Amino acid sequence: MSSTVVDGGQRYNRSKLWQIGFFTLNNTATNIYLFLIMFLSYYAAGIAGLAVVLVSTLLGAARLFDGLIDPAIGYIIDRTETKFGKFRPIIVIGNIITAISVLLIFTTHLLPDGFRLIFIIFALVVHKIGYSLQTSVTKAGQTVLTNDPKQRPLYMAFDGVYNIILFTVGQFYVSNYLVGKYGDFTMGLFIELIAIVMILSTVFTFLAIIGISRKDKKEFYGLGEETVETKSFREYWHVIKGNRQLQLLTISASTGRLGMSLGGEAVVTVMIFGILIGNYGLSGTLGLITAIPGLLITFFVTWLARKTGSKKAYLAAVWVGLLSYLAFIPLFLFLDDPTVISLETIGFATILFILLRTFATGFGGAQSSLVVPMIADVSDYETAKSGRYVAGMFGTIFSFIDQFVTSLAPIIVGLVVAAAGYGDAFPTVTDALTPSLFTAVIILAFVLPAVLLLISATAMHFYKLDRKKMVEVQEVISEARAKSKISDEPAV
Image (cartoon, rainbow, N blue to C red; front, side, top):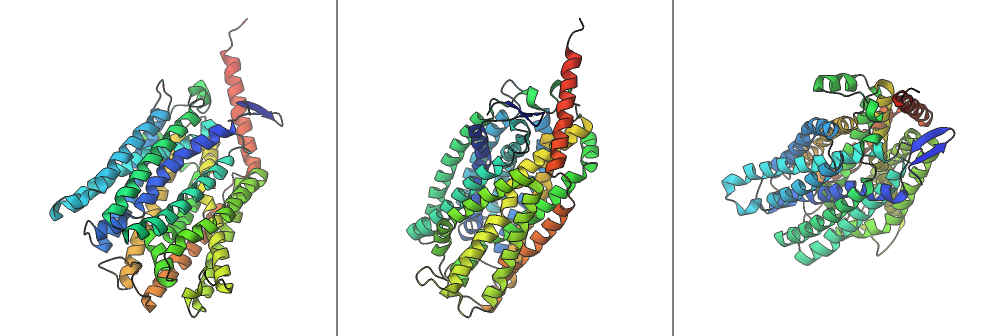
């Protein structure tokens, strides 16, 4: 694939397949730290000695802080221009800061009791700064990588594959290997996990830099030399206020992500598999079993997005995920003994659980990957409308709302498990199933994700940037670039 391709009379900036695949690893480089932080509750409460509700509130506040600093990071991205490009320096700086912060976070237990809370708050602040710097580039960088409506959804295919491998293999590694090796969430477990995470994130970051290196140039930013400069936060505010599509996409994606975050919290996974079903190791094994079907779902949604547009594919995925979560509720309400869900004696309940789990996580989680190229669509929509290139700010405004909403996930989990009688320590694999704990699992794992996906689908219904509209947007940008080149030619 060449850099510029003519399709139906329209010229598109395209990337080679390997460039898209490599740059997508930037998201994997940050997601692997996200996977690690999912288990922070067990370190903070079990090793550092902090209270359950306090830890949940702290993690929620950290996500909220992440969102609050995102607009400033977006401003930095849009204003950055170096001989190494706009995006690559920020990727490197973000990854280094994130790595240092993780070392700080997981040494909190070495400090005297009176200093631990302050120190871990400081370490989490540093972590969120580094994490936000690197992850913000993932969204903004889509605008320079490709503007072809048929090629942009390929990000989802790569990201979906990487995430399935990361979270599936990661969960199996933790639940079947590390917990088996160390017996519980001990410091030895965290030391080994942290080392693996840091090494892999560094490798992924290096490959991502290679992927975007040929596109990280001013000629690919907005309208090139003719791009309207946005100089102040007040101007940014007017742009954001006037872009209805960004607002709808943000509401839809953030509510859907909150639902998926609740179901994916490490504590909720322990409650489902370790307590309700009675076999925590099944979570890792089942992840491996559903990996291939999950990949097929990712490829299907990507194909649908390339054929019909991102909006239609997004809506289809959300509705299937929503119905799958709802179907879990009668399964467990009418199942006398949830422990019959086992790979040793595979019956109807086991088969149904596996199918629902596959569809709920596969289709329900598809919108998280699909939304990234859709943010680039919204950015291009703004460029076509006003001539402004604000990819950094748009990506981080989206992250701001997204982090604000998803910051509620650990808080909600903490409050629900505390109401179930676990105010001093999180439920672990050694706890017995009680009626109150059963209710907590149903609410956190199935009811709330379904409700939030319904809100997500409703917001997306009013989103207007479908396949046809994005072709029009790219035509406007292409014409503006062409006029700019003509006007720059010297008179004869």
